Structure formats: C-alpha cells, structure tokens
Image 1 (cartoon, helix red, strand yellow):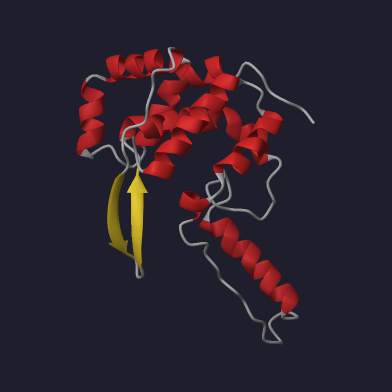
Image 2 (image 1 turned 135 degrees about the horizontal axis):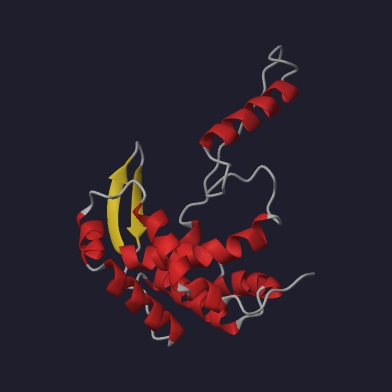
Length: 184
C-alpha cells in the first residue's frame, strides 16, 4: 500500500490556502463573515499560514443552529477561517483517499452530486424491477449524528495507514476534536 509523507507543507502553502479560501467563499460572497474576512484577506491568510506552520492553530467553537427541511435538524458549522483550513486539507488528501471509495458513494465528492446519485439510482431501479415491469422496495437510511459519534480513534488508524506525516495527523486531530467537543 502506498503511503504519503511530507504533505503538511503543501497543505499550509499560501497558494493552497488561497485556493481553499476561494472554494470556501463560493456562493457566500454576500455573507458578512466573508466580507469581513476579505477586508484583510492577505493578512488573514498569512495569519492562518503562520498558526498552521507553528502548530498553534486551534479551530474556533462550532456555531450550532436548528433548521427544518422538512424534519428538524441540528446543524453545527465551523467558522469561515476553519472551513478554509478544511478545504486546504481536503485539497491535498482527497485525491489520496478518493480512489479508494466505493464508486457509488456520492456525498461531497467531485463529479458525484445529486444528479449522479439520481442517475445511478434509476439504473439500479430499472435493473431490479426488470425495466419498470415489477415493483421493487427501497430503503432510504440516514445515520443520526454520525459525525459526532464516529470513533475517531478508528478513523485515525485508517488515515494513518496512508498518511505518514505526523503534522497532517495533528491537524486532523485538531479538526476532529473541535467537531467532537463543539469547540474548545
């Protein structure tokens, strides 16, 4: 199995942080927190870079709110600057892990959004129901609060099989700790 070292400097490079910032602000350009961050964009990105380089970065507490769409859901969202760090991390490690995922897994994957999922569903539905001549049954399931209860120790063991860069592991732990505790 191929392993990866020396990824941290790629993650925290100014170029990667800027790319991550652009991804994070997509469809949010009118939000006050984006406008505020952009007022001092270069310094804010340099500050993030410095904190990551010195490993003094700590995610800010999650903001939690309730939405109804149609069921009531509790949503926790990271601060804008932390979402930049998430994108910077994913920019580098996503290609490593993406090729190991199940082909039909669609959530948060490039080129695999809702439309892809609907087309795959339709293909399987036709196959199972003999081209719509028979009924078939479908189970739609959701694991309640998955990201808050997933075993981080096991998750990190899986990640460590491929990522041998201890600084990357440190950053992932910081992010996971924030999601587990809802902030420091």
